Amino acid sequence: MENDMWHAHDEILGTYILQEKLSDTSCFEQWVALAMYSPHRFLLRFLKKDVPDHCTGALKNEIFSLYHYSAEGIIPIVEVETVETQLVISSEYRDELPLRDVVPSDLPLDEKFLFALALRLARTLSFFHSHGLYWGGLLPEGLWVRKKVPRPEDFFFLPPGYAVLLPFLLQKNLIGSEDLPLLAPEIREGKAVSVEGDIYSLGALLRLFGLTEYLHPELFAILSRCSEPNPSQRYRSLEDMIRDLEAWGEKQGIVQPYGSFNSYQKERDGGDKKERGGTTLVQEGGYPLPQSEPRTEVLHYFQALSETYRSRYGYEGEEKNVLPTAPIQNRALKSLPPRAPQNVVLSHQEKGPHPKEEPPPSGWEDPEIADTRTMEKGGINGGTLLPSAENPSSREGTTDGVVFSASERVSFVEQGGMPFAHPSSEGEFIAFRWERNRVLLQEIEKVLEGVVRRARSGRGDLRFIVTSDVLFLKQTIEASDFWSQFRQKVRLIVIEPASPSENTLTVPDFVRSLVGGIERFLAQESSRQRKHLAKVLREACENSEIETQETTAKVASPLVSSNGSFSLQRCSEIFQDPRWVASCLVPLSTPRKPLFLMWWCPIAWDSSLASYIQKLIPFVLERPLCFWVWTETTPSGIP
Image (cartoon, rainbow, N blue to C red):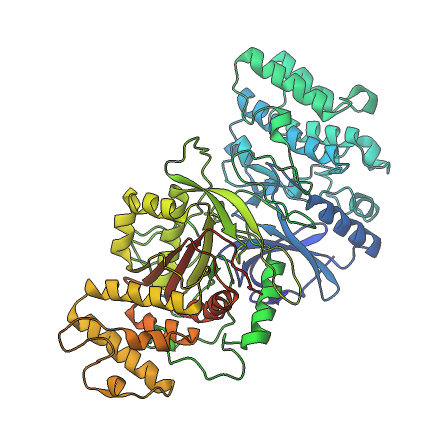
């Protein structure tokens, strides 16, 4: 089955850009792709056109059923869609490679390795069986590893399995002769897939990893029983096999690598949420969102979000029928092509490769993004921030956080680092929901490092983090070791909690707090920097046709009075329009020290302020400006 439809740099679903072709398998053309609304890479598998329609439909249904559940040992599916009549499956990708590409001599083929691998694969298969799904056959193209010299915990199933496709593959002789022994005899004869067939395939696969008579006799007997030709002589269920393996491991004093079967399984059925080293998030009123550690974005949401912003603001993030924003002052940004606003709402980050991106400083390591860009000599490629397995019992250093529904399928459990939250629904308006998470200071620190690096390349970032106690979190963060180091990397404007004129914060309240933060920031800067900002504000006033005696004076009187003290009253008027906030402040940002606004807001917003912040998003994203909002309540009125 040949398919030459797809090529590098093709755009898929308005979301992905194909990077490189990995391989052609019996049914799929496999590509690594970048996502326009995410820092991660993804694995796209295009189902070949020779696959009959009934197989395509059944495969799609199986994928939809997997959205209910999450388990270790499974590479999560992000979405499944149809592109030009061809089914495409998007999965997380962290530089895994198919088992077929692993050199057997690189594997530590000993008893402990085989025991741990058998236990991991059996538990993962049992997870499928417990939900009425079968794998069909453990073919090497369906098992992936995350290292060329993998440990047992580096083995992953790449769903969906082959249960739906096996009849077609056998009929067309598309399974290689080297892989046929991995299928149960009754499956090769055309019988339906079953638990016994999967157990046989597991045993046959383990033979390739050193299942010989030189093993401990009891372990050899357990694993050999799986691949008995007669189905009645095999284990009746994988739970029975797992119990025998665990019992043997206990007798040998081998530490159980993944806990018991009951604690391993994690079901997400719309309400019951069990945590094991991470956070389980369930989408209200629908399928739970696919999850892994780190979790990634649901890119279909970003596609809808992008279209919403394109229709509302136009391609460049400009609201329709309004004056354009002030020209970008940063020279590094003038050469950039227009781009649609990126991830909106929690973690509104502008991501993706930049046309003229400066390499990071020597020795800089981005813990959040698996970055494929070429670095200058001495630079370091970014890694992926793995979620912390800590579960602190005290409140010190942590907060019970609620995270704003966001762009990156985000929550601090992402990104590596973690997405701060999750989208809830798609429709004419993007709705938001909130989830409660444990936000660790260590994770905050690492996410901040990645954000600063992107800002140094000219990419904006806007996030909302909702916590039960903003002021406590503020004190905790500012007392932490990393805070002083962070302040040295950025130009930080801290927007202190405001005293609202009413029970809720309004736009004037926010503007007043923002101006106060700028005033405190300028008090620490040189007179040259103050005059520079004054000049920028004067130009912004002229562009908005606000001509006054103060703004046309030789010395920027809106900023500096005759006695040298600060007077930012003119800013309060300018900043009533959110377009001018980013335009006026971005010149303060430099490639070495980007501008970072940190707003601590424990008070509820009114709808006008929510709308104001929403309009501010695209103007932040297209500039090297970071804006983080820490709050305690869900803003009302956000579309």
